[in-house]
Length: 330
Image (cartoon, rainbow, N blue to C red; front, side, top):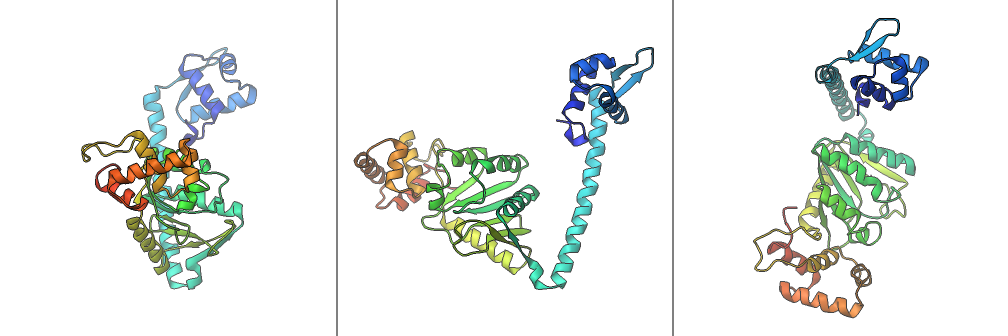
């Protein structure tokens, strides 16, 4: 927990031991596993931070300063350092933008080649995002599995970053598990929508500062991308996302119901079926998810369409949003 002030796990164990009353070097070594020169180095570091003081004697003892004041002072100093670093980064960013705008237009885009380099850049862009991350999710994928991205998404959402994702139906059929990783992401706070047909491209937009698209029109793998910096091209990509967002349907997941707007609330089974239909999965996959036969599935689909007064599955998704079965604001 205190890595931010350069205290690793062993140093934290030593500090906790001092805080809980173990004061001699022998006691601290037994409690933390650190000994000899390593323990002495840690104790000097803790003294330098003002967290620990030494009481001279035949066998020196160590006592902790009150953590509420000592740690607060250390953390406040770290916050000041981070603030200065952010201001410096902002100055560098502005200088880079000015030099880019006045220089060669080729510098407005960057080609990143190699799968590992693509993954590193994607994660770098995610971590640097401050306000909103917008994604068009479509196969193929650079990450080994969708679960790799859940940790990054959780980190951003906990920082208050808005996360909007538009899913291509093919991605929900091959690459994601609608009742698995997608449901986890939405539960974390992701705003998810799904298109009725294929998305034109994969896309990542971080704030209004950077965009990422595949280098090829229809790639078989993500081995190269184009990184787009502030320009008319980046604005066009942002406009494309917003147009698709307006056309896409909110992705209904079991349990996400807007209460009080429908004469009779949907059952959990109806919401689950609606979720799979809206995702555009083929019937055999839907039947497999639900554990029913194709004939039973068709009966359930027909009953759902009749209840919603819809002729098509896409129409059913729209009707479900209008009557409040799913939250259209999400």
